[in-house]
Length: 435
Image (tube, rainbow, N blue to C red; front, side):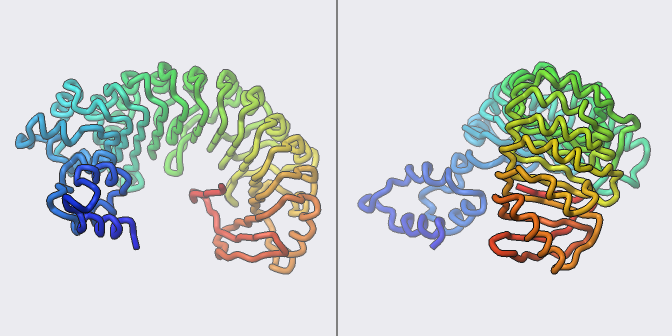
């Protein structure tokens, strides 16, 4: 029996003599997701007023759906406050021409405290909503802000040059407006499919409490210094450009030394940072708390970078992710052995950087390694792969799982003794989850 069915059984028995008073169902409903609440509304007792907005205060509120963010005047101040009571999460999803949101109305609600409980804001097609965002960032208790704009992915590549320039200007203005955001912001996530100049990142410098920063679609040939001032950061994810657009300039890895003051960093994800050597990663060697390092599509990554990776003693996950189309430098034995100080390492990904699959044997000493993710330049038959696994097991005694990736691989699983083996496909631009 589902949780909703169980609740409905209790609701149907609800009476002055049966147990739980109706007002206590408010405390129960707050643990239900949106779909469960819909089911409960359809089947529940009417006297419990399950359509009361207080029942949904734990759920996201769609700004583009709720009328009182537009010109609709039928909602009184009292009813709006009831809708927004203890409302933590706002979502705006829809292009400007498909919504009836009035920025002046949003400004009024912000200035008069109707939205003060909001702590999480998510805006899709954000380039269409700059005026609204410029008001929402003024809310006093925002801790999480996510901005997404995929105008190219939705067909923007055939848009006019004038329209593309307008999108770029809007995104620049939105990033500039972030300097007005609450000092309580802990998480900032911006993903766009054009390229925003790193000069705009000066708007982030006063976010002193920021702990998680994810930026995709920025030109980091400038602006890294501004990120280096966010000294409370624990999680950093930077993508130089994106799948659709590449910045004109490459990153100078010396600029990454500006991140040396980020001493609280626990995870680092760098994507599109080409030609890195040991120099670019030295910023993170001084921090003994780095647990995860991801280098994705960092073309021409030098084997010399292994010396800096090996100097991160707390690292328990290291992912070097390339596609078959990336420009790749081979890791020699002299490079791989520099990873041996990583005694806490449990997960390792090496995509297309090994000359030969048996170079894995150079990693003897990583006794805590449990998961190995690999992609090779050569193809192996199933029999050859079984021999390979049996060869590396004595060298990596804690190994429990091997994942093998390649272009257009068919997904399937097999076992060799107690070792679990997974095969999967990975191509340029694919999302990849390796946890």
